[in-house]
Amino acid sequence: MKEPIITVSGLRGIIGSTLTPEIAIRYACAFAADLPTGPIVLTRDSRPSGRMLAEAIRSGLAALGRDPVDAGIAATSTTGVLIQHLAAAGGIQISASHNPSQYNGMKLFSAEGRVIPATAGQRVIMRYRQSEIPWVDHDRLGSARRQTDATSEHLSRVLATVDVQAIRKRRFHVLLDSNHGAGALLGRPLLERLGCETTLLGAEPDGQFEHTPEPTAENLSGVLSQVTQVGADVGFCQDPDADRLAVIDERGRYLGEEYTLAMCVDHVLRQRKGPIVTNCSTSRMSQQLAQNYEVPFFASAVGEANVVDTMLEHGALLGGEGNGGVIDPRVGLVRDSFVGMALLLDAMASRGAKISKLADELPRYEIVKTKVSLDRQMIPAALDALQRRFAQATASRVDGLRLDWPDGRWLLVRPSNTEPIVRAIAEAATELLARRLCDDAAETLAKASSG
Image (cartoon, rainbow, N blue to C red; front, side, top):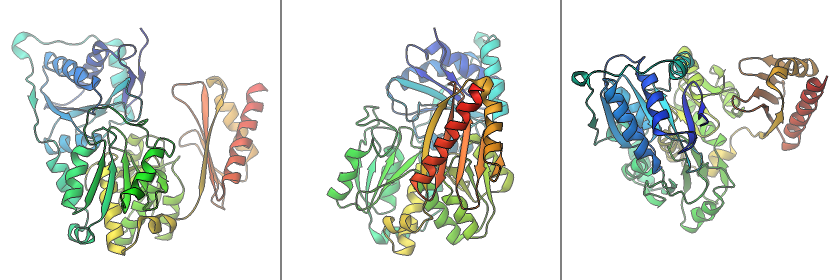
């Protein structure tokens, strides 16, 4: 039997093939063995297979002598808030994020309510592969309990970050597409408390996705027109575990996920000043905004845990990733679509502006993403060759190789963790310039690997 894809923050696999109850129990117990004393929060997104995995993991943790707290279906960001609120030792979110329904997975959280950092993740992987599970005797078994209210604390924290009365006065009409994921469980009450008229798509969290789960322009083609049909002021689209948010404007234009973070950064920096963090593959828009507002900007390696590490190191005001994940430490240390929705509605209310105007006022760049087949052993030499070719650019090796030019262009080339490829991402003032950077990178990498 093949193993699932395992990273330092979790695993993901196909149910019945690369992800089975046995694998889930072994992995959960490898994680729990390193946690301090205290309960362990267990949540899941809406996939039907999640209940089966939750039952297996709950039993495994109890057999290890731990006390699981099962909060049922919940957003990933809600998991982080619950861990903090309950003073838990850690948590496990059962989710495959934006992958198709045959997949599921597990994301691991520390006692701080954040995705575990890389060092802790490496220890989990080592124990999962090498260690025997230290089952306890009958008189030391853990006790499982249910958490019936999973969302109240999260809702209160999100509402505390915005001017609720100002938003309520505007009576925004919001279309929320939760696509039968976990998002509507908190999305509906949040929008109700903000006085919004709400059109809900896929509100039932049953995992019966009406379109491919990743909230891209192609996958949301059927949602775009519905925003204008119902006369909504904005469309919000979540992935199954609701940590990512894509935005559609009042004209049915897909603004996408990159704009989510940038618009939130702009709004927050209009109110308060402080450091901003994104990962090194996120659009330059947030970096440019930080420069415009004269606040520090820091780029982390790719991955939510790396973003959070950098945020904590520099006391960041806001952070996130270009996949629509906004992290506001006032609420939690997890990418949070509910934070994104609240901040964007707050921006629209405070400025009396449509969501299209907020987007159009941002610095404009175009991103192109490609991949190049390359044997892993050839990657160091290939990246060196690429850096020599673009010697006039400023180079960073925070994650792969990132090259930055004074005119705002940048190129990131980083190896995949799971395939013999490198991913090239370029951003420039026009799509043509960005594509040319990717093409030049592919040519250089090909020559280096063949030479």
